[in-house]
Amino acid sequence: ETGVTQTPRHLVMGMTNKKSLKCEQHLGHNAMYWYKQSAKKPLELMFVYNFKEQTENNSVPSRFSPECPNSSHLFLHLHTLQPEDSALYLCASSLPGQRSYEQYFGPGTRLTVT
Amino acid sequence: QQQVKQSPQSLIVQKGGISIINCAYENTAFDYFPWYQQFPGKGPALLIAIRPDVSEKKEGRFTISFNKSAKQFSLHIMDSQPGDSATYFCAAQNGGRRALTFGSGTRLQVQP
Image (tube, rainbow over all chains, first blue to last red):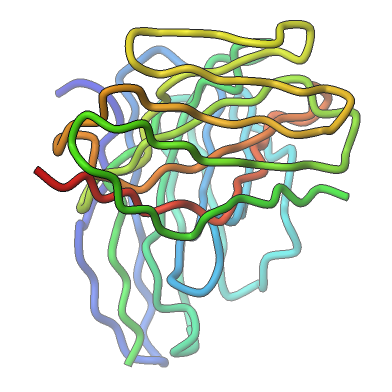
């Protein structure tokens, strides 16, 4: 596979469930990102990882827990979510440094919290 | 100060016409201004980008115009085609942060 892949593509979960979103990039990048895209707000940055280390947390509630075991994989662990967390969750990757504005996005996971 | 304001929210253009989308920013620390294109069911994809030391950049039918003094930049799509129908996001990056700050998006519809 090439580019950035995300699984699952669609997820429906109850407020008491625990689930995880997975992202994998095959581009040799060292920076990875989680974004939230909803109808009410533009693309919102959630987390940034650079060489497996978290470098940004954009005041995200603790019910979202990211994990980056290596430069190719990124997870978003979800627990006790709220209905307003329903959105499209996008993963992206980039080279570090000056090329980091060139971000490659996956297709996203459409999350519905019931 | 991290906000990027984008207009219009939606745009309908006839085939062959020019589509123009505008963005404005406040943070003078921004030093890259990319535009992303998103089709339904897909993630955003980089379309074209500009640095503030250049007033215009053209790639095929897509042109970014940049006005540093006004802190505004715009995307022009010449000879718009139905295949250009998508949502377009402007963005800005502060070199000290890797994260992008996105505009609210413009849904472009090109009618045949």
